[in-house]
Image 1 (cartoon, rainbow, N blue to C red):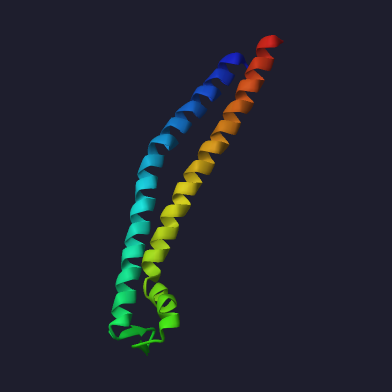
Image 2 (cartoon, rainbow, N blue to C red):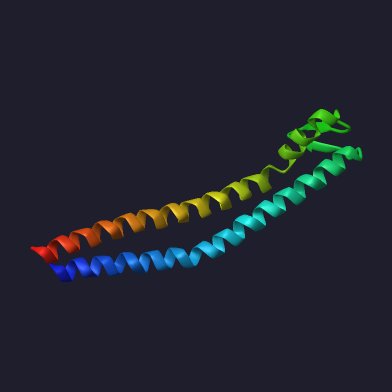
Length: 119
């Protein structure tokens, strides 16, 4: 491999890191928003359960459950918000992992580049 090819690979990795870095802010905002919406939905369901509102979960009616299990039932009722929250969190973590991977690749290419220049 020639020095010019190595330089191109290094530049390519830097551009990829810049692209992922730009997405990171968006994903962080989505993660925070999804978490907030889940917490809000959960609070609403807990209040509704405590106020005696009836819910239907896969054909099972729930009304006035014992206080000790209200939060568990509310979490089950908010399953779609929980899925969205977890998905947003995973996307954010994946972007960070991708940046770390690109950094490692870039460091490797830079090391090879230094070695090639010394030869």
